[in-house]
Length: 238
Image (cartoon, rainbow, N blue to C red; front, side, top):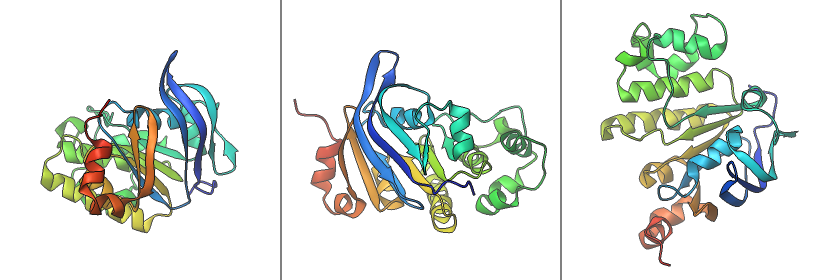
């Protein structure tokens, strides 16, 4: 495990792409070992928030710290070294490489011992000789998560892992994610369009709208109040 304490903090963050500001006044923190879900309609800034944490956007103001370290100005690869793991929405696995080769690339050197991630995703062990292009969508997502775990992050960011997957595969992925949350002492931030998956995964849920956080609180409250959930992630009323 990386030496940082696993706590991620964003303070007064304004960010976007070039001069275009997408995120405004973002303040939140994730404790060591805590899991949170981030939900909201399409285009409200959820993925941009993860991009900002990873250093892929233009930061206009604010501060980001990981443990005791200020990572605000670090380049993305140095944020990975500092303790961030990232599972992008597009998965971005290498289609021409085998499962084992994809994992070896992530680890930085050839190695055939990936038992920790194979325990989490036994399907990958069975298909370790298959190329990325030969895997199902669910298996590709599992490979993307496994690859991120190999850098031993203290904070894992996952961007809509259930997108485009069949309901049965989503259930399998949920089981693996639940085991990951229980068995590893890392913090997890899950961006998820499927509100059911998001609220079941984490006890704490952040709701975003128009680039801002509009709610940060217990998931159980949203699960118990469907009208509140619909109002927060439904169609805006001008």
